[in-house]
Image 1 (cartoon, rainbow, N blue to C red):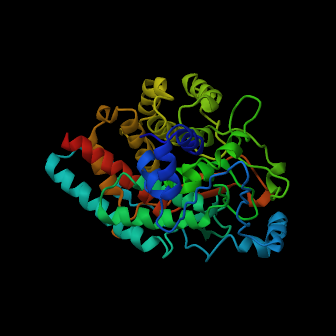
Image 2: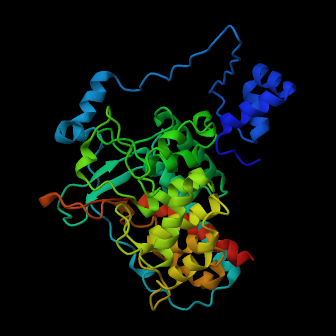
Length: 433
């Protein structure tokens, strides 16, 4: 069955009217919940169900913070401490490698559909070879933080939970056993980084945010806190007067470095929250705003965190599929938006944009409107010998300018590779049809 918006309330209501179910829930809570909701929860997470009586009342305390009081205080002022900021980064990243040039222009090919399908599958397997070497032993994906305007500013590796969720949501369509293993490792990593009651943050010196929270929640939906909707009240409380979801979760005891930013609603952040919460009254205003933004053609410059229209359409189409029937009226609009972005070569910009465009067309049911054979050749021709695709700007602040520091961008070869594998899987399905 589809998970109810508030699974805990659903279970309590069911137990109130069904004595046998109540007894099973008390005696074997985990197995009963899994059977009732059609989910599988982590083996190492215990579930306890308590029954209050007229003479016994239970008070459940939330878990202690993962961080000591000293660590929490340090995080509040972390943005002003170079030493603390270094803790968010890892080894200096290598220089940017140029893309493989022969993938830029794709000539007409006489290759058979069967040959292209074989080449595409081999390309996916080589991409997985690369990802296995790029993801750490804990299942965390690495990203590179760089300066968009000044390539001479040092580049650094980082591995916030957001990046892992961002990539795994693209990779999860791949049925290769190695892809499944990568996704499972990453799910375990995200479960380790969760903060009660089911929130995540990008850096320790930043407050929790809804973009990280929505994507991570989508990946580990079987985690009991996520399954029971423990994080839903805080997500719903983080809306503006127009019902749009705001990026940062600002609390009195959290870091406040973002208070000098423009705390604004972002279309991709809203799409990601809608994908998680689904088609429900609480997302109606955000859906209407997102629909109007796309239908009226006001996407350019509308996102603070994502670089182009393709990225916005991609996130919206993914939300459309996960929150059906929400956003269904956008299906033809998104198709025309994406198809209208094609250049004279039939591409959609760089290889990351092309990958997200292909997957968007898949989500809206229009992937057959482009030349799948030509696109497979584009992706296989752009892949390097080590199985990677080039590092490109995937997300990052598109508006802030801190003097010489400039704008912060994020991307990596692993990030691009995940989206190219997703696109190839979608395209190969068209070739087989």
